Length: 87
Image 1 (tube, rainbow, N blue to C red):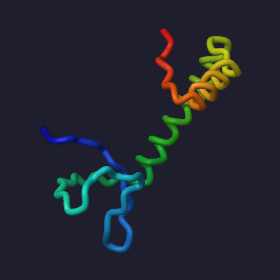
Image 2 (image 1 turned 30 degrees about the vertical axis):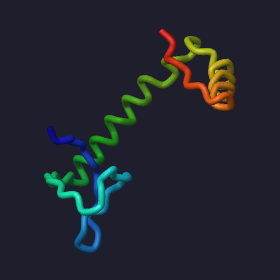
Image 3 (image 1 turned 90 degrees about the vertical axis):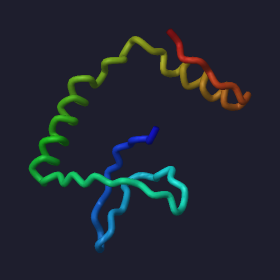
Image 4 (image 1 turned 60 degrees about the horizontal axis):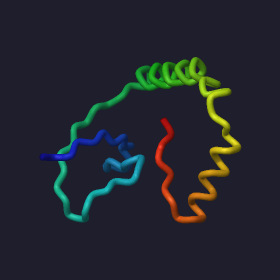
């Protein structure tokens, strides 16, 4: 079964340049679907993302003790332990 992943790329000097690292072996054959985003569509997408971020900002406030969380993470890393997610 093929792995399908959306990857944003920039068309530069006649080539598609991925905007993020790809986990593809050298010589691997891939299928590319090109979807061009207009400047207006990009501006609208960015506007919606910013509005979503503003609506959700502070949503975790008071729910997580960030100082304790950071302390636990650093201690676990130092000990080579991976912490399970809390319920």
